Image 1 (cartoon, rainbow, N blue to C red):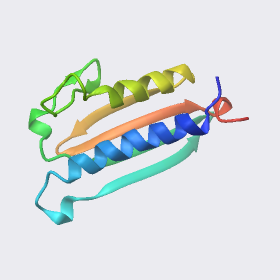
Image 2 (cartoon, rainbow, N blue to C red; image 1 turned 180 degrees about the horizontal axis):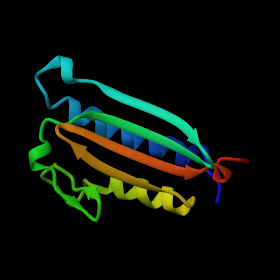
Image 3 (cartoon, one colour; image 1 turned 135 degrees about the vertical axis):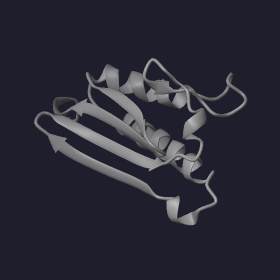
Image 4 (cartoon, rainbow, N blue to C red; image 1 turned 90 degrees about the vertical axis):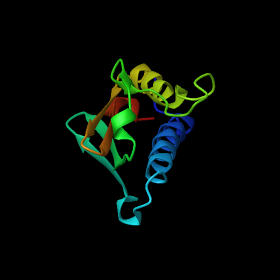
Length: 116
């Protein structure tokens, strides 16, 4: 499979939406920062998103991905799983972790999936 514009928009859209929702939860405006970096390393494209996470103490990871913090689990929490499925379909994957109050998301996709 190759990376379509729809898949690319969905990956970025989900990642940025999650980051925006996370930083909006802090009252400290200095911590409302989102870092986005896209780079090529060897034969992979890496998308790295990091943001402050005020509720990092309540964040639960299952199978390496955070569960939704929203009360309605039936309609929320699919964004991360969706990103994982899209990346894996292209031969890549995603990885997420916390470092203190900073949330880090890495999406990696083989370069050959990006060529049309």
